Amino acid sequence: MDTLLKETVNAAINSRYPGMAIEGRKQIEEILIRKELHKGEVLLKEGEISTNIVLVGKGMLRQFYYKNGKDVTEHFSYEGCITMCIESLLKQEPTMLMAEALEDSIVYLLPFRKLLLLTEVSFEVNMFYRKVLEYSLIVSQVKADSWRFETARERYLNLLKNQPEVVKRAPLSHIASYLLMTPETLSRVRSSL
Image 1 (tube, rainbow, N blue to C red):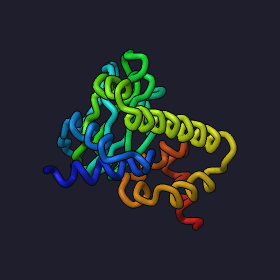
Image 2 (cartoon, helix red, strand yellow):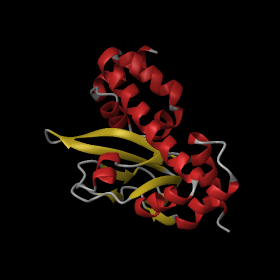
Image 3 (cartoon, rainbow, N blue to C red):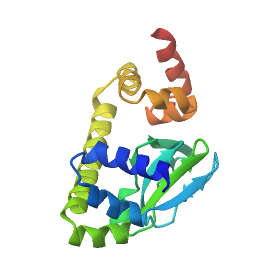
Image 4 (tube, rainbow, N blue to C red):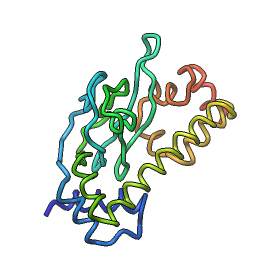
């Protein structure tokens, strides 16, 4: 048995639906596909259609897009995190959001179609899927509110408090774009603390 697989499934499920029974966890484990990524490798390219939810077992990924010729980081994921290009996944349309490994990584791909089939026969898996979608909506709203209402300093302090792994491991240029600030502004914020 792949120990990392079991640890990843437990971490991902416990972050969204900790009460999930062992049977549901095993059903998800059985359909996961292990994929190893090298640093800089792109897991999902612009224009592709997303077919998987991704559970990060080891390493760090970022989701990003291009706007006016610049790359903008949308999201960071690391051990135990779940990531997906939700619009492409649900609509089965090409994505503008890409995913790349910031470190050598091991991820587990959860095929969306197989997951949907499981949701029809398993209450546990259905609840897990619902909790994943709810969490994704909340994260999107919190991030939008942060961009609208918080100062650059407040956004950085929240990242430091809520996702210290990102601050420790991600390149500063990606952190700056994630926080919607220039690297120079991020440098000033960091030096003022």
